[in-house]
Image (cartoon, rainbow, N blue to C red; front, side):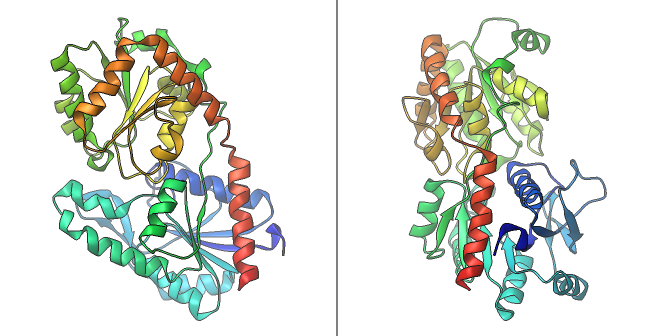
Length: 380
């Protein structure tokens, strides 16, 4: 069997109705597979006016907004119409990318027909309850994930640090890596633009600490705000540049009142904004890879991050950035203060990150997935 013989039914909880790193990675994968001659059919909730065009054929599954987070939707059923469409497509492998109700039903459908199933893990869903006062639910989330993933033939994670956690938690016996790439035309040190910085109100020579991502609490916004407050108490000159939008925007703006918010950016504008930081601060522990971390590294920007999945596999502590224990506000402030006060250290660690980013080619990474599909089908 060759790549062009693949017929992949891909189930996504969010293929293109909210722009984030996970769904953009899925769209890149589908584009790669279609370019190699494979057939792909995507099953996902949809909205009338998505923020970007979907790659490939998308079948809309019944869904409802998630309570309290209405921008996201959750699939409600594998309806008879969807099942008929799946049967007509006749996949030889099923790929689930979100551990929701529909994914459970898709796994059952595939197992009844002897079709192999691959699951890709994109975020640490089990950690989300702790950001909404529901940490006691975390063990139940882990139990539910284990049940789903052990019904799959294999699972893949975007980083070795995340794969290690999945193995330790007994999520599956076959845990592989589907990493992430970076577009070097968009993200490179040459995008840095001090004139643009001045145009958005960052006039002086103060070092700029960047935040990049959706403005949601699970990205560690509380840790970011508390750390900025501590830097202020220490008298460390700095400015904050926030790239992104989300439902926690007003909360974050109130907690970091002197920050410069530039909203959602994309393409060359995003590359310019990222390269115009002096350092990235990423306190999140929910990522399984950390696309934003890699993008900043590719721009020659050193990274201060929580010692957590994703970041541990990208950032070399003391060489291309600093890794700090999650929740350690003083430790985060120490690392950022060093960079704020030492421009030569920033340049040295930024250059090391840029060199490391050269290893992440989208073609090679997505070709790895194509080979994984083929191996699972042959094993069956």
